[in-house]
Image (cartoon, rainbow, N blue to C red):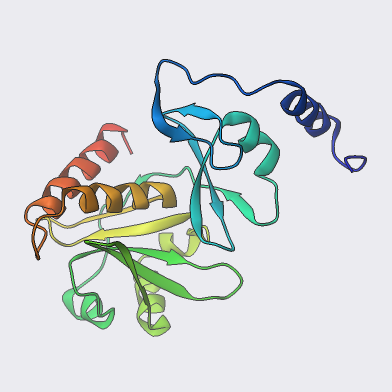
Amino acid sequence: MTGGAPPAVRRLRRLAQARPPAPPSAAARSDDHCDLCGVGIDAEHRHLLHLVDRRILCSCEPCFALRSGDAELRPAGTRVQLLDGFVLDDDLWARFQIPIGLAFFLVRERGQGVVALYPSPAGATESELHLGAWDELVAANPVLSELEADVEALIVDRLSDPPHHAIVPIDRCYELVGMIKSRWEGISGGRAIDDAVAEFFGSLERQGA
């Protein structure tokens, strides 16, 4: 029933039900489709985070408008902020026990703690954090207290010289993981990580963040 929905939402739902799916535009690729309704979408599209399954869902615009208010879905974050003067020394980093110098940190909603995810040949590997180390990092960098749970993350890149630190939407984090996975070579990854990180942070800088 839609009796309790706002008029604008009811109109959108009627339009979505009455209109057949549009064919993919010339800009759409055959492997780009809405994960909610299956319609073809452009390569540049928006994402929803499924909070229960912890999956990033590609979304067409009608589904984004209709479903972003669902209890189990949340629009991916939009903030991109490069963090100059970020404070993270070697001793504190070691306490996070992350095996490589690249990770993104995500605050879980509903008091479920903080996790770090780092790239591997299989994709993103998740590691739960010691909250004492995270609290110390937040105290040294108060901007992290504003991190929006589940939908945006802190990226730490200690492979570069100087290191990079940024707050980005969660879908951009998985974009970086995908870039690394697709280029991974051998046991160590070859230049996959270095090349992907340089490309990724270059794109953030071009955004003027």
